[in-house]
Amino acid sequence: MKTKLNINREPRHIAYVLLGAVLLTNSNKMNAETLTEVVKKLVGDIQPYGASHIDDKRFENLKTMCEVVNNLVIEIDRVAYENKDRQEFSMKQMADYASNFMTKTLGVAE
Image (cartoon, rainbow, N blue to C red; front, side, top):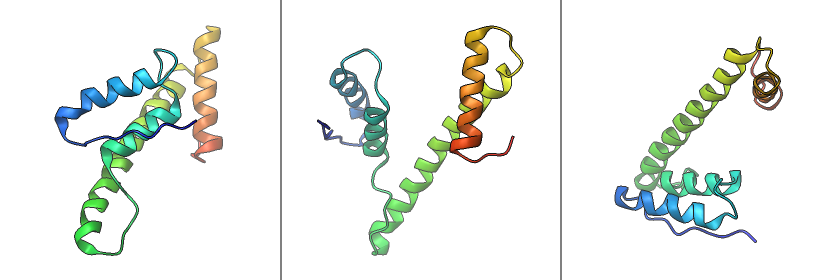
């Protein structure tokens, strides 16, 4: 069952949001769905509404969301690049996974 999070995007609520997200999971590690829901709630709506007084804010939200995604992609790419020639199994495994994600999922050329 998917749990909806009620999140106030004011800065003072961010710590409570993250704590609540952790408590919603069965382990100390948040799953991707929970993290996505938290980010979406913190950033705000990004879908155009059709009224400029609303869409101005949503456009700023969209730019923020794109920046967050870009930052995450940079981190994933760094794992792939910095570990591609490693001999240690776990490091090579992570590099290969990150590289496959970049090329096959995102369609980024090597």
